[in-house]
Image (cartoon, rainbow, N blue to C red; front, side, top):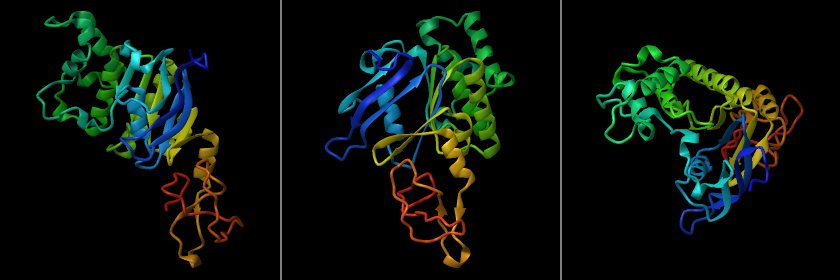
Length: 288
């Protein structure tokens, strides 16, 4: 039973470690409600991708629970309700002699059936999702002819082809240029607003996360904190450096970050604040 009745994904007191190592995630709790656009941020190695594997039942927690659409994830069977876009378009082998339409038809295997030909309705669905991601002109294009941004949109179309209610993405802008990143976030924002598609995304792109996400979860040192988008946006707008005379090259922050690091740098900046650059890859500006 979900503690939050409006949640379609709820994580409660989740702890996970590999073998007998220190926990990668410890006592993590959060929820994603229908229609949310949520982002998970954190430094490399903080446990973001591990958390996604737990949400997708690819790993089992040491303790705690993951509930999806009201069911424990271990017993959840209706995975067509969840679309997943893995990290990196290398998931699609661009050297494989396949065209875009074939990739999307293959993902409709549960509806088409074993040893059965795709029907017109399945081909129509391919056209629909390609139109959603502005890739309809590439239906018959070979994978090897597409750019990184185009391949990423094919992966999103593939995840959408079975009409999911929840879309989970792992670093969707990894390996693509700035212009294509803008296009991709505009696309995700449109899917969220117009189709009411619930989105949960791991990202390092704090600028777009603060612009589009309604919920932001920050993972550092195994713990998860909720960050208000406007707070993250404010911090990014006011990032600055120590005066040049101090010869400090670290970005600074205006106040204590949500990761519970204390700002005790000791340098006084021109704004009269004290700041910390002793964070362990804190996304609010510091590196340890």
